[in-house]
Image (cartoon, rainbow, N blue to C red):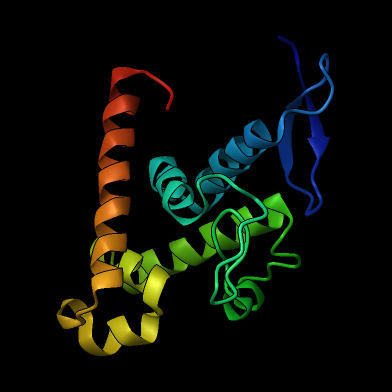
Length: 161
């Protein structure tokens, strides 16, 4: 297959197949995840694991708390990371990955705190750290960790998840 590069909304250059027209929505979401994981230096397996757990790759997902899209961005986080339109796949993924990268720096790479912050807010994790106790946070972090480990193993085997 030949690849042709098309500019994206923000000026990035995601490769899209040209011979068969635009990619399928999931394929486009995967390419966005890979691209922004590379741009923000976040493991792609982590980004994909967050999407698995947050929305199961449904770009139209809306939570009861108001989080939307593939990475379930909250309104405040969308603004913080300049997510222009949280329902647009590229904006949502870019915003979510930028937020993950910021949390990774903030918590010096401790993915338990990063993922706890992603679901419960960084203020709770900053004040209480790993002593913060919530069944929702525990289950969320466990689910992302399980997916992340699986994706890392698949990546090392050379398979694509």
